[in-house]
Image (cartoon, rainbow over all chains, first blue to last red):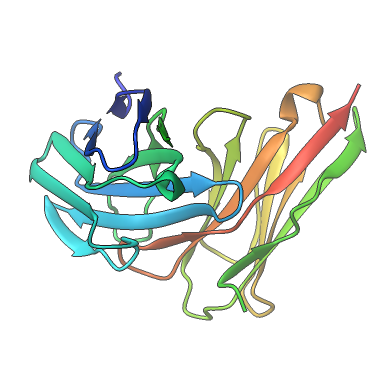
Length: 115
Length: 110
């Protein structure tokens, strides 16, 4: 079975450029999460969706960040304009929400470097 | 106070020993508890989950939950060098949101 798929795996860009990260969740999972991980701040939840609807985006650091989930099999996280402090590993995770908490399955991550 | 707290380590144990990883959480309404393992440069992977007070065993891993003390732990018996990783404690307070701890780095010395 295919797990969570993320692309690109690595992204190097210059400050001010737009960056789009993509995620395909596991088929049948109805919850999707975007995380950012850095050495300093650990794993931070940015936003999560349930049934394609954004439920909580309070973790999105600034208006420069936006996320969409147009259908059950695809989500994007966009940073515009990007800044060096956005450099991190961005993970997408999906979950078959069971009502008793959610076991999350993580994608391989996108390592973003903003120069 | 952080919502989910873990000792960052590193925790170093000899091969074959028991590794004990601990986690405390602040929300008494928390319902579900998870342990994820993350190898360097890789994504977190779920290794254990527990919902009820007491112990839950899966192979060499045992998760322990004490809701009264707001404490969850992970024991790894017969530790192997391949167990060397960062272990993330995660707590769900109900609904969709799960809070992750900062993780404990474990080194198992051969």
